[in-house]
Length: 127
Image (tube, rainbow, N blue to C red; front, side):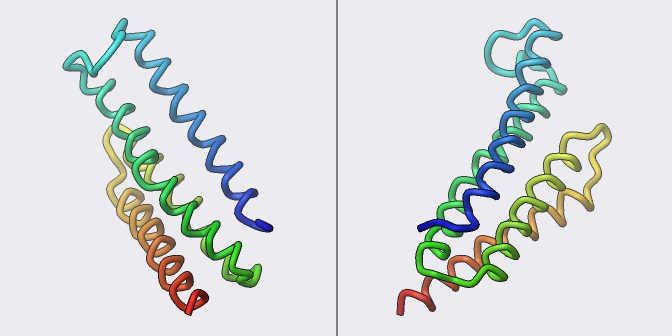
């Protein structure tokens, strides 16, 4: 049974909805029904959302597998916090004008750390 992952999945889902709402809002304000309309603001909100979608599901899947293998709460919470914090920092840093590059970089570092540690934990727990 999943014990910790659902908490982080729920929090990340809320962030997903916020990022989606920003895309919708930008589309409405700039009257762009599809694509980016060669609009840099639209492209930025689309890529912020897309980057979240590209990394979060895979990371959550790995964390869920660690959870299902019975890992301790400390490891699971560290993985979840790293992923959540990384995704928030990246979205905030990337979505600003001008970008806050250090937040983007730290966000990706935390995201990659969560993915790699979860992958290694899955291998260790499975063997």
